[in-house]
Structures are given as C-alpha cells and as structure tokens.
Length: 109
Image (cartoon, rainbow, N blue to C red; front, side, top):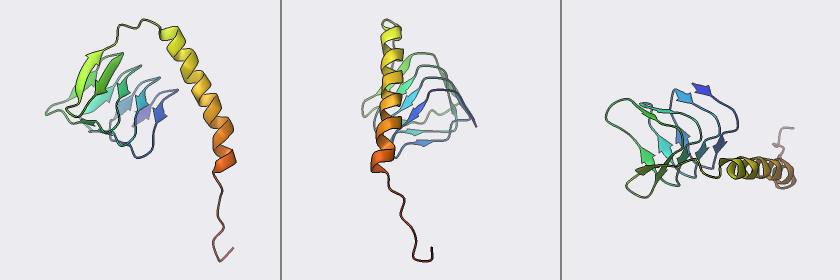
C-alpha cells in the first residue's frame, strides 16, 4: 500500500486500496475496497461503501457521498482555501489530541 502526504483517515474507516494519493479525506466508517485506487484531493463521505465490480481509479477532486455512494467531481474552485483549511485542521488536531489522549498503564507495569 502506498499512501501519499496530508491524508486524513477518520475514526472507523477501512481502506484496502493499494494506492492513495495526496490530500484525501476518508470519513468516519467509510470503506474503500482493494479494487479502488485513490488519486489526489478525493473525499469519501461518512459511511460510504466504495466497492466497484472491476478495478477503478478515482480521478482527482472526486467526492463520494450519500447512502448509494454517488460520485461527483469537484471543479477545483477554492482549492487554495481548502488547502489552508486542511492545514489549520491538522494543526488543531496536533495541538488538541495529546491533551485528551491518555495512555493507561497495565497492571503489570
């Protein structure tokens, strides 16, 4: 599996894709089958199941959404703002997660 830079994998997602590009978001409880290759700037919505019958490559800026896992290609308008928002989101998570994620020691330690 090859995973690019700046990807966001949310809680409970399952990705079996052999190739994932850069700047993608896989939302909560989404599942991507091993026959799918993900290019750059794709968004897989919450709870979406991406299981094509034959090998498929999601083109850049593809959004998968809804209970039927419909696909739509984003025009790319506002991608600078989207990139800035993604960077801010990453910084926020790096700052906040350590405050609330506590390691527990086992009884044997």
